Length: 133
Image 1 (cartoon, helix red, strand yellow):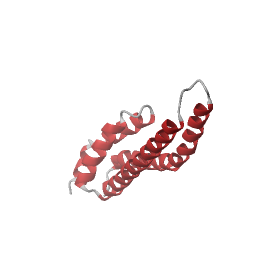
Image 2 (tube, rainbow, N blue to C red; image 1 turned 180 degrees about the vertical axis):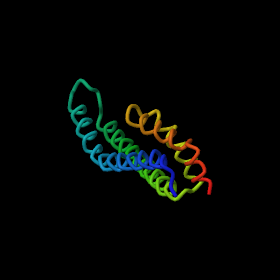
Image 3 (cartoon, rainbow, N blue to C red; image 1 turned 30 degrees about the vertical axis):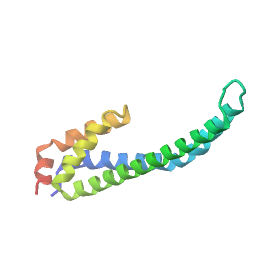
Image 4 (cartoon, helix red, strand yellow; image 1 turned 90 degrees about the vertical axis):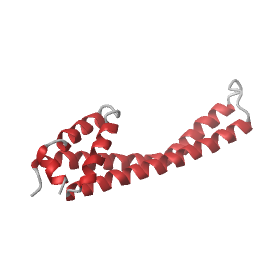
């Protein structure tokens, strides 16, 4: 039987996963926005940006966005796998949920609230015994 406070761990993990998916959906739209902003800055004669600098900036911006996308997708997959494994009572999932919770404490205010809920649920004795089977 699943412990009552298990939902204190799984529900915030699911909310985090959904928010991460929303962030991943928005990320591809940042490149055109950044390109339009830098193009506007390049057309301003007082900015001092050359065409070479602008093209280099676009390359670095694109590369940064792709790296961010890959890291965010991997973190979202890790969060979802932790959510599923926690529901199944896997021991490693409790440790992973604690790591996710501690890192999400820095994401004020929503991540902090979700992280505190996960930590309360993960340290519940019933959840600990459920996850150690």
